[in-house]
Length: 293
Ligand code: 3HC
Image (spheres, rainbow, N blue to C red):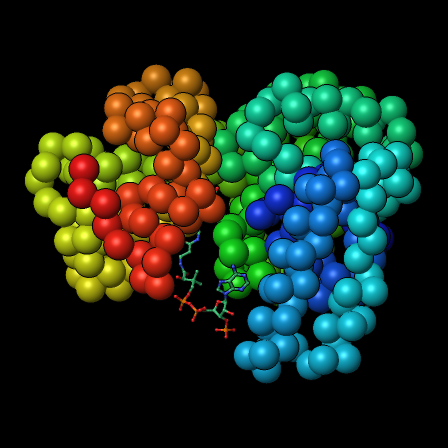
């Protein structure tokens, strides 16, 4: 089996930058692409901060940090990703945008190049149906923060070949990740359980059953979760969570996946969570402070 050694990552946001960093730290060459210079610069800074943090915490030797950094190239040109063994797409959670990326790559890349999407909830098969290589398309879903979370979900469609699956499985392991396999159903393994759980926590807030802080404390101290559901929703992004729940609701038509009104209202007010400074909590001070609803 031919090993995957060179990788392209499309998108250098929260997920794309983390994915590029993890690949470079695993000793592989990676090119990461953003649409414009300012977004690329933001991604570059995110990777630098994360690598520095790993050095500070003695998880990464300073010379290893330099070597990892040297393995990452940044570009705004999708064409530069065409000669890679594997291209991982990590752009926004919009099917049309993802299809456009894969459509362009499909014309540019040699037929042996494997395509992977980091989608959390959109159908991988839809993307595979638009390219000339559906057998060489998988879902490869990382978790935030990518350098820390050990899991990746490897999603196999009804068209994915055994060879593609095995090569990407070996690649995911070579990154030090623990892959689990999922069929192509919206939410895969983690979000299928996580999304209704977090949405129920939001519904509790809506109904005034308990305070934001107490709901989070209950799950942290009662179940040993690293973060309570509302803190996690702020961490992932209120807008991202809303989008995922909409996609899952569309797929299953079950009320449990429907975004609660409060979540919709928070999106309208751009209370996106940690990244915008306000969500269920206010992050503008030293410590997060719950904002009563
Ligand atoms: N980037 C890189 N490294 C980070 C980081 C970041 N953004 N945030 C934390 N870390 C590292 C720290 O350097 C530290 O590393 P070390 O243990 O090797 O020294 C480690 O993570 C722990 O960090 P801290 O001690 O500062 O903080 P915590 O102990 O509070 O842990 C956390 C932070 C790892 C984020 C922990 O709170 C956690 O596991 N939270 C849950 C995260 C989670 O559930 N993620 C999945 C979200 S769902 C998702 O991504 C899917 C999508 O489709 C929605």
